[in-house]
Length: 258
Ligand SMILES: Nc1ncnc2c1ncn2[C@@H]1O[C@H](COP(=O)(O)OP(=O)(O)OP(=O)(O)O)[C@@H](O)[C@H]1O
Image 1 (cartoon, rainbow, N blue to C red):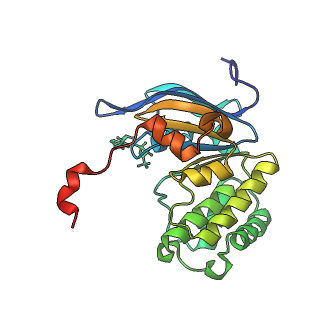
Image 2 (cartoon, rainbow, N blue to C red; image 1 turned 135 degrees about the vertical axis):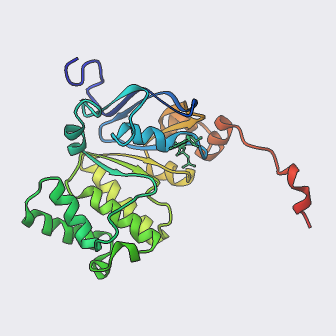
């Protein structure tokens, strides 16, 4: 099949029929999704819904049992290098080379992507500044807080100026000022033609920040479209609970009541 055949031209990420089971138990059960180029796309779902598994398969980190993922028409599993050149990825539970300093980590990411030293040095400086990490540039990443680690990982994912950003829980552990800063960086990136897909549990944030959203539960897609299409007259949070089916009050915990 030629590159991108059968896939919408306007999609930065095309996921078709992705599936993965662990020990015979389906984690992702045939998810298909089109992420339009230039969109800020939220992926939401309850704990264990299959978000991380889906994003890992879409970014070449976890081999699917079935299905395909294309980044700007390039098959992630047939041409991983070609696809990864176009993508910046913040995986869940980032495992970084944490014996490097923050500055070294971004530099290393840039050099791995084949950028020349002068470009890497200039971009590293800009990224450290943008993420407010200049003062900690020489500190080892192992000594960073959880939020600082998230920020340095995000900075490293941007150094090669990717066209698609795939971010698993980028705001987890990040303080509100830094979160606002990251949101501004990402919004600016989208306005300049980039595409972002971000998983999050924070509905309010997704409603305010994203223009598209997909809701997954139990490894399946329950709804996808623009945020306004998906939420209708409700808030995204109410619609999410409706779709996913909330638990009742904690009757089983009567012993906990004083
Ligand atoms: N490596 C693994 N081995 C076995 N089971 C796994 C593995 N990774 C994920 N799972 C299972 O797959 C299902 C989906 O997990 P996944 O991490 O994709 O969910 P998630 O939507 O990202 O959840 P959360 O919001 O809690 O991070 C869960 O039932 C999980 O236990």
